[in-house]
Amino acid sequence: MKTLTFTKKSCSIVLTSLFVALAVVGCSDDKQADKKTATASVTKHNPFDHSHDVDVTDVQKHKFEHDFASQCVQREVKHSGNKDDDGQRYSTPCMCIAKFLMKDLTAEEAERFLDEHKNAQSLVIKYENAAYHCLQQNSHPKGPDFSRHPQGN
Image (cartoon, rainbow, N blue to C red; front, side, top):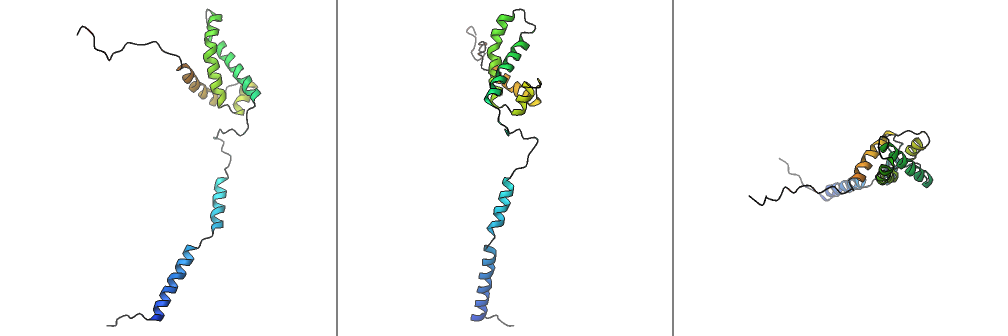
């Protein structure tokens, strides 16, 4: 049986091969990685993305706020017996809802509401959230406290 003996020549060949292998693996082309990240950062237009591509002007927001609030009050007092008192009572929550909607208003929603006199489905969903938010600000009457034990028992 032969035993393997390492000579200076075979040892230098192994070390040189190892060095070349590590150098080749360690070197990479950073330019390709930059191109991949650059193309990944460029976004395509997503029809389901409701980002604010077009800004809504302050005039449109102001007009939307007052038109929406007046429409809300009219809708609430439509079948009311005392329209003046109910109109004043509903004006505050309706204005709160309009301001809440105005914060996240898109140009398309404003255009459909102001020009076409239609409500976009996204506006209806936002309205429900805004109504919940604004109507929760009112203080509710204090209910009974069931955590206390009755005095007589």
